[in-house]
Image 1 (cartoon, helix red, strand yellow):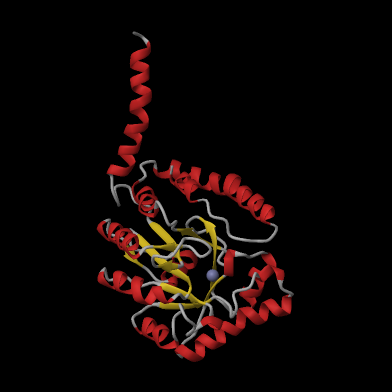
Image 2: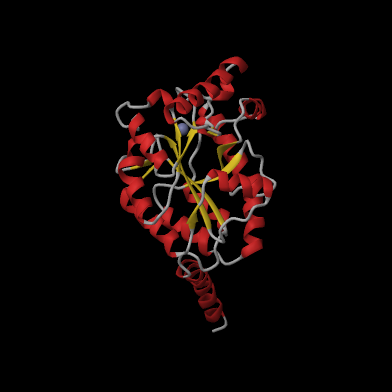
Length: 294
Ligand SMILES: [Zn+2]
């Protein structure tokens, strides 16, 4: 008899926890700032380049919109990080790496319907190639208020290059984009999220205001401006991830746990995984992502 209540409690607690977190929907206890990274928004497979389906993307955007999130620009983020200028109470920065055409065909209308803009980090060597944005599409995005950032010319693993070659790569795509858009290009994203102190210093030296990696997390006052954190949205479970991010109930405890998970767990797991593959590569552990929001 004594065991029954305990069993009930053991069954009930996880269910209650799950319902408590998920039923809150977007925005019950929101993460004030989300910096999201997507690549493709199409029906293709997740590997080797991460993608979400247009339907899932629309649901994720609707979820954030329902929760009252406003999209911000990287300029807003810079002012927040460096000058403490406040952000909207619930702010989201959408970023798209590589400049895939699906960003224009699928993501743009979905975001525009909610009044959102985003940032594209363009591989300039692929401008106009099949599956990638054309110069005209990129210009149109810029006139719609989207920001365009540099992502090198051929998408190399920068830490593997010599200093002069890496610097050439970092600056060449910027020159192309500035000529094309007739405006300064001040932001950079590392191909594959690969960076080390030497490469980050080169990006700084090249005159970029800030640069994004793919280390999991959310930028905060102490973040390195040349290694800004983002959240990769996985192919499966993206909506659930955003629900955790926007509705997780533990506030400061969650932030501390997230920090711990990032430093102690994820970094080591990712490093071990990269070593096993024998070359630097961005690993994907979508099933571990919710840990960040426990
Ligand atoms: Zn990339």
